[in-house]
Amino acid sequence: MPTEKFTHNKHFLLSLITLGIALVTVGTYFLLYERTILSFSRPPENAVSVVGQKSKPTKIEIGDVGIDLSVSESRIINGVWEISKNGASHLDTSASPGENGNIIIYGHNKKIIFGPLPYAKVGTKIKLTTEDEKIHDYEVIKKETVKPNNLTYVLPTSEEILTLYTCTGFLDTMRSVLVAKPI
Image (cartoon, rainbow, N blue to C red):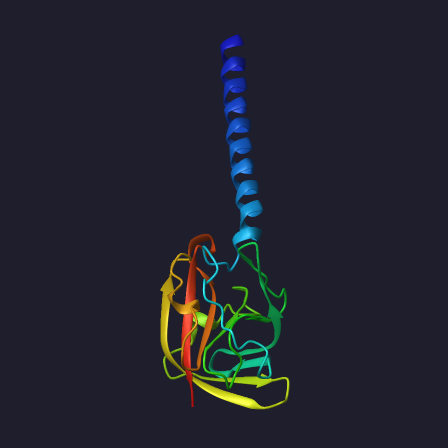
């Protein structure tokens, strides 16, 4: 009888240790997750210098995948990209519609936000509405999944492009990127 009790206690103790390790791992992940959500490994070094000259985006529509969201201005603070909890975010140092430059808009990988973004196809049409109520039309020309250390798509450009992205992959460790040109 004492051997059975010892074996039972040993299994119970191992189960508790395993559960403890799992809880610490999950807790650590969620602490770090908030600091890295939708961030790239570092901010782009050359911010667009013409910020604020044109009207900022306030709404994005991608009918083919059911995206119709408000857009708010967001910043990079201490390497972390601010993000709207219930809409899309426009990086304040990126260009605005109608400017020569890279317009960067991003959002959470949630069904009601940018979760459907990876299902958009090359040729998909995008509408951006700006503060002055003008509508700017774009067409997707490229889509790619990249690691957060690949800054290629969030760097300034000399021509007007629209870059959209959200997290994707296991534990949101990758970025799904769409690039669109004005039409």
